[in-house]
Image 1: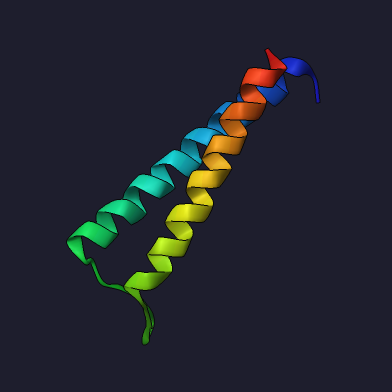
Image 2: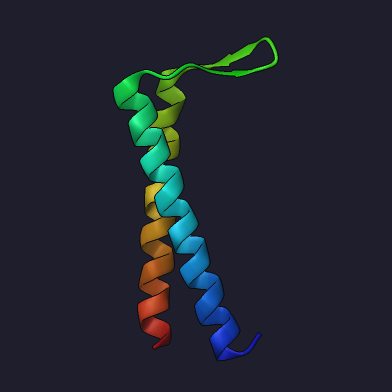
Length: 68
């Protein structure tokens, strides 16, 4: 992977994780229900996903700044 492809990959990946974090934050605030078939995803799972995706976004953008 060349430098431009790696830069674009990290930028897209970091942006995707930011969007995921924002959506889970909104889900926590609004208490949106989430169902997969008959299985309900509890709100407390969004706390874990918010932390994980926030960390991955931070790490992606930090690597992006190191690649400059």
